[in-house]
Amino acid sequence: GSISLFSVITIILGCLKIGYFVGFSECLSATEGVFPITHAVHTLLQVYFLWGHAQDIIQSFKTLERFGVIHSVFTNLLLWANSVLNESKHQLNEHKERLITLGFGNITIDLDDHAPDCNCTLPTLCSAVSQAIYYLYPFNIEYQILASTMLYVLWKNIGRKVDSHQHPKMQFKFNGVMVGSVLGLTALATTIGVVVVYMIRIGRSKTKSESALIMFYLYAIVLLMFMGAAGLVGIRIYRTNEKSLDESKNPARKLDADLLVGTASGSWLISWGSILATLCAEDCPPYTWYNLPYSILVIVEKYIQNLFIIESIHQEPENLSDDIRTLRVVTVCNGNTISLASSCLKSGGVAGEEVSQGITKRKVLKNIAAFLFLCNISIWGGTPAFGCRPEYDTGLEEIVFGFEPWIIVVNLAMPFSIFYRMHAAASLFEVYCKI
Image (cartoon, rainbow, N blue to C red; front, side, top):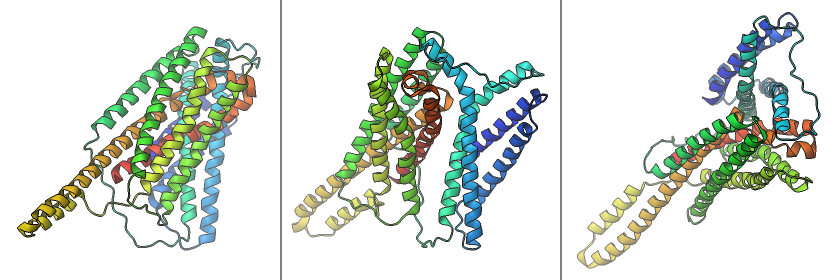
């Protein structure tokens, strides 16, 4: 479903690029118009292939299939790098202007709008298309990463032997998660409000920009602290559980864990860069000190959340429902003589208490999974995907590391951070259904 959504937006982006080419056709190469058409056809065929064959285990022509699939993986990675470069060119001027507004006058790089050398035949349309392209690039980048991941899984599965064991289907039930849902929806609504205010105030003046950055950091610090605390509670419940872990070989489960750890490294890289910039800079504006606890919490929260998800997916499935266990206790007690009634009631009471505790733990875990799911959705869609990116706007990292190096690092790492939130949300949904 997610790859279909992102592919549709990628095709819309290609249509906008075609419109941009038509407006500047006098001075643009014909490849500028041919490429988005070819890319759209490639996207349609690839999504059709993934929908029909993503779960196939190829057993014939394995050498040819391995070559073709791994070629597709690197093709998508090349398209991803191209999208990152194009997005960077669109962002440079905007972020230079924001940094100048914040008072970083020593950034003396000339502004370059990367516009063609001729005038657009429809100036209003070209301006609108250029603005729309800027907001659609993140979805195109996510599509390339997701397609590469799915194709890589298909490549790993070529020639693999699969057992006939059928895993139970997950069932989604919305019951007993009122607290987690309310808190998660509150976080989602607040995130949207913070993003709107941030986008309105950032770059307008020095005072407004500083207040927007402080507002973002304070809200993000509070949200990350709640998410980390929820994850710690969930880990604590699992650690006190006497049930054995499922250590059987499961390629899908291993891939989920590897993706969580691998994609989290993107934001870890940005956070460590921000921490070093704050500690090593000779002069720090006041708002940058809010960046220090924020960057530390980003590292800690993702570590805790990864532990919670990995512990959850390694839990043994319940063999018997709580209702069946309670029914067996009652049946055995009713079937015994009167002389054993007191001992039956006592053992039945102990068993009933254990069952009650088990139900309570499951409800707490479900609320934690629901809360973290909604929080990851809000962070994924609310902040980096739609332009709320303080990593560009603080200015301190650009002074310490240089403008171009830091922008390149952020543009390479940010897509993985966005993908992490999307994958974490999907994993938490599976955890919720499994509990």
